[in-house]
Image 1 (spheres, rainbow, N blue to C red):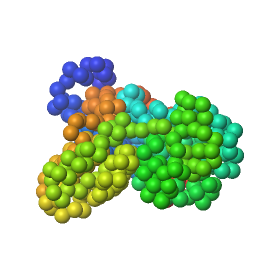
Image 2: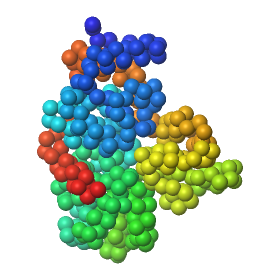
Image 3: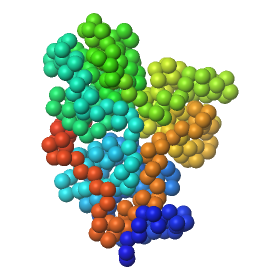
Image 4: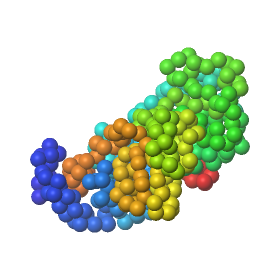
Length: 362
């Protein structure tokens, strides 16, 4: 079989693509494992062997030792984590290399290194500051944390990671998502006047020296383009419209929205809250649209609403479509590898230190 061009697959019907993807999966068997993040579009998600958030998927993939190839239907940083945590004999493929993350792009290694130096001119960073990067970041930043006795966090364990960090040193540099950092620190009881935002495009991050000395948490000026769409007015709208409704949001939402919510949690935790509720329960959920729609379909005996009145989804993850998945799998059938994600060895080793440190803590 000659492998078709990616462009030609866009001439195929949905039914033909489904048939070809399934045929390729059948031929590849246990040699390939397909991972899909919760935010993935449904037509791709249905072909997943494993589903979950990015870290859960990467850990599960590493346990699939018989799979020589991991096909990650998510975004670039997720595929990097899979490559870092998987066995040396395994390789990771991202069906579309354009599937990135706008939040992860808001902090790069040169910026973080410059911030570390700038802060170091005010305070002794090596003894006072622990760097923590959200898993939604590049492998380079995970490696930076590995090299500076820091670690990684997820949206489900950020609080525990902060507790560990404060047991090591009095301050934290948290990047790239300011909202997860702020919400997690606030829930620990840290006053807002001890939480500051570092803006990498300004001298000393736009901070005064006394602010840096006072701060316990130094946040990076980053955010999720999806979760920033949810606003307090949307919470008020559903409170008025549906008596007794529960508002459940992701901690990447703003502090103002999180403070108004009934429940706050990661994608896994949001699903647990909704699935464990009795039939007839009503929810407005503040996270990516594909996940919310999947819950609505799965749980028709519950009233489930998307918290934002306008459509907002992870547009970069949406780039992974059935055409790209089919193209990647049919190339593998022919013994060809496309779009392999390979983190450089030294960078991977340091990033693995940070990731394994997180796993030991949690």
